[in-house]
Amino acid sequence: MATGEHKHPNYMAIFWYLAILTVVEIAVIYTPLAKFTIGVLLCALALGKAALVAMYFMHLKFETRTLGMVAVTPLLIATLLVFVLLPDGFAVMKRTVGVKAATTEPAKH
Amino acid sequence: MSQAAAVHGAVEPAESPLTPESWGKLGMWIFLAGDAVGFGTLLAGYGAMRATSADWPSPYEVLGINLTALMTFLLICSSVTMVKALEWLGKGDKIRAQKYLFYTALGGAIFVSLQAYEWTHLMHRGLHINGNPWGASLFGTSFFLVTGFHGLHVTGGVIYLLSILRVVARRPAPEASYNAVEIAGLYWHFVDLVWIMVFTFMYLL
Image (cartoon, rainbow over all chains, first blue to last red):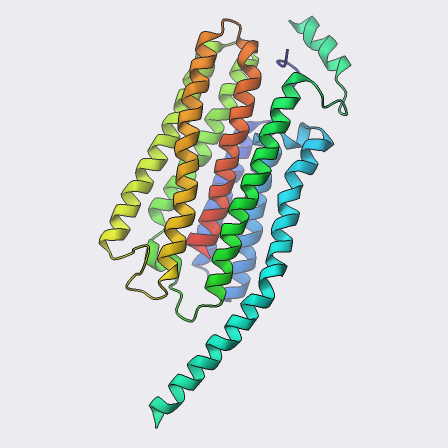
C-alpha cells in the first residue's frame, strides 16, 4: 500500500515558480546584456527549472539515495560529453575560420 | 487505511529500496536516466554543430518564440494536473484522479497539435530537414531531429497516460493504482523537464 506515505509538497507554488522563471527567461533574451551573459543566465534558469521539476514533481527530494544516484548519473555523463566534444569543436572552428579567411582574401583583390 | 499507512511508514525507512513499489520506480528512473543521456547527446551534438558553424541562424528570430512559450506553459500546466491526479488518488478520490489524468493527456495532445502546426508553418517559410533560407542547413536537421524526438516522447506519453487512465478506472480500490500513476507521472514530468531544456537551448539561446 503506497498511499499516505508521501507528503505532497505545495504543487501550486512550484507551478508559479516555473511560470515566473519562464517569463524571466523570455525577458532575459530581450535585455541589452552581452550574448555570453545571456547564455549563462539562460542555462542557470533552465537548470533551476529542471531541478524544481525533478525535486518536487518527480519527488526526488523525498526519495531514497539510490534513486538520487540514478538521476544524477546522466548529468555526469552529459558533463563528460561536453568535454569530449570540446577538442573536436575547437579543431573544426579553427579550420572553418581558416577557410573563411582564405576564401575572403582573394575576393578583395 | 491510516493504520496500514502508519505501519508501512514505520517499516519503510529511507534506506530500504526493495519494495514492489520502489522496484517499479527504480525501473522507470533507470529508463529515464538512459533517455536523458539520449537527449543530452542530441543537445550536446547540437551545441557542437552550432559552435563550429559560421552561419548558424539566430533561433529566436527565425523560429519565433511566442507559440513555443505557450507550449512550454501548457506542458508545465499538464505537469501540475499530473501531480494533482496523484494527490487525489492518494486521498482516495478516484473520480477526480481520473479527471486530472485526462486533463494531463489532453494537455499533451494539444502540445503535439501545436507542434504539428508550428512545423507546418516553419516548413512553409522554407525550413526543411536538409536546408533553410537563413544559413547552415544543419540548423533545420537538428531542429526537426530534436523537437521531433521530443514530440514522439509526448505522443508516447499521451498513449501511456490514457492506458493508465484505464487501469485506474478498472481497479476498484484507488490505492491499487497509486504506484502505476506515480510511475507514469515520473515519465510525464521527465518529458516536461526535457522540453524546458529544449526550449532553452534550441529556441532561446
